[in-house]
Length: 288
Length: 277
Image (cartoon, rainbow over all chains, first blue to last red; front, top):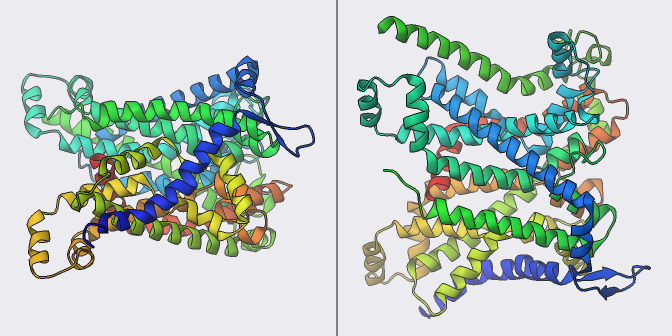
């Protein structure tokens, strides 16, 4: 009996992942080599046609570029801001508890709701952001419907949503830096600014890397809700990322073969990210 | 030196107040706007404080979209996904942490590879086709079952169980306890904090799911609250942001309240799960 126990314990997990992860993943690969017939009544084997279509279509390169710009801008800005703000939050300044609670609150806000809040702020008629830009810079922008402002609005909403996550990790990491290192640097006469970038920043590299990977995955996959509600991939496809395009091809145009091949491409991206994660984060670039 | 410190302190305090305000402003403004009459919403320059508590927006939002039912759906889906993930994770984590068995390595890597495959996105098209052939489209089953097991939860539990000394297991066995008794009577009580943290993170993840519920639910009565928000924007043709914000507040309030109440716990479990991996 005891010999069978571990297998019995693993059954629930393996039934679920085989049926709902492995089987669909396998179908994804298979589907990517097929195309629906003209009447949609059967599938025809087309070999690499879907992939060739994808990579000879200049639109798809635009999608890749959009994904790249959106992800790297959102992630870069979030990490930079989080590192700076976390410095302020570890100093035990009066009111820190309240500041933290209110600042972290967007962590509890779902992507769909974040998008709704920011759509409201950016609306030309009633939005406060639109109003402020008009008053301060005297520019009148139709944020969500013009290029490139729609992308900027998306990035703003994404940064706002991701920031608490990064703050939480940076605060934890900064509090883990041994007091002695900071004290000796102070004796050496390093200024606050130098200490921040020359000492603290290198010390939290593993966390920065972890956050980079986590944020990147978030912008690749979970940001679908933000895009769907704020811009629907528009204007002129300027905010159509890989995941949004996959959704359009799979569910609006019902081209399963093409959507499947896009899945496989995203699987490739995901593999690289996960590989990097385990290569650098799990194996640990640890300084302590 | 002391003087410089004081200046530094005051600047930090001011910066923190400004940043906190900016970060919290979207939620605060949405709350205030949810009480504005349509005329106030569109006034120029924009008004920030509503002139009265105009509850009509909330009534209107609930009339346009069945948000109550959708919140219930979200709760059902999130609770069952969380329970499922915890149960499968505890069992599998226990198997990996406390047993040596043939095929352990293969089983572990089989699970490990699924980290590369976020189910609700990368394989969404075939997963949808599978649901169609099972006849599960537009049911709770489709919203829940595919997400009731994950590598992350299994690994988290495994890591945790491995920190518990082997002597306890030996002692339990000498006392005649079966392995299930040991799991339930010894390991689980020692893992309350860990499981609580994992539960919270899983719950938030399930509650926030958007793409999968969007494609797999057809009727309003099966949709989740996240989809309800989108429907409200679509239904509110005149873009009356007062009504949209009222609906947003209805969907946001439960999670925000829970977060304010147990924020410390949230933060702690997030950090420990992330740092331990």
